[in-house]
Length: 361
Image (cartoon, rainbow, N blue to C red; front, side, top):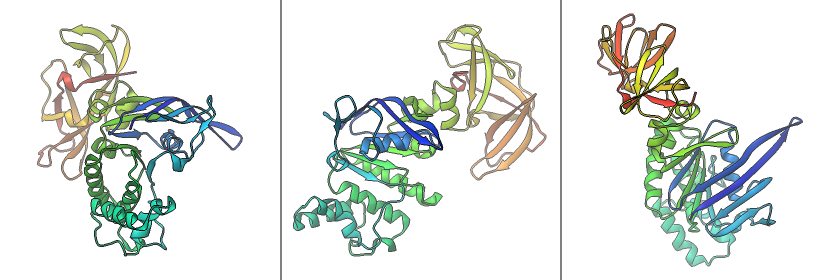
């Protein structure tokens, strides 16, 4: 089911000043896709999610779920949360400690007055789907964090919503469990004919889970695209920087040369992936550390070839992370775990034009 948000505005008053949480947000979330709202703390992503579900009241704008307008200031429409047909999984899971797993999952059906026999069948199906068969009579708080997260998911699914919303549901799990649960969640959602809206500040989570990502900043949506588009071909400096580690270097555009855009920088001249930028304009060159392939010795003078010195080298498991000093710039690069390079070595790297991304200045 598609979700459409138009001109959504929300303000808060805190300590005598007005904070603009949402600034006339326009957004279309396609049906039956995993759509992620990604951004730093305070950017408005959770406020937007809570407005969609009905837990926050916007100041202006309109929200449409499928063909139904569920909130509109101009039309005076405000459909209650429980009548919007949505499922919700919270950051804290919201598991009731005095209830069994069965009763936690059954609660949305019980409050709707569904018959007991039907409840039993639906709860059993939901627990089977999230692989919690046989745990229905267990106290919910005696489960692991990952199992409690699956109880929350089963409860959100049991009423068969067309849309399910997630508010940073994995943030309370440790790193290994978070990775395992993320894979499970992607598989679960991939098997459902359902629209999922996912809020996170974790870029890895967003890249791994999503069909589409909307990057937010200061109450506005900066950019929307697939994980690959956002990571490899972002349009904005903020997005390129937020979605992954990056070396960001100011450049001046010289013009086009064949299929490339040529720029001048403190690192020298670079041929980059094509962008429609006027000669003489300012831009930012984004170089991902994984594309800086280090070699011992100086670079052969050419476009995209750089010589520097290893200032630091840190082993982080699958790679070494190297800081490369080039004049006044310090660049982050990655090299294999079996590298023979050492701190103080003179090194060079060449970046292919398709991996030289130009973004806004």
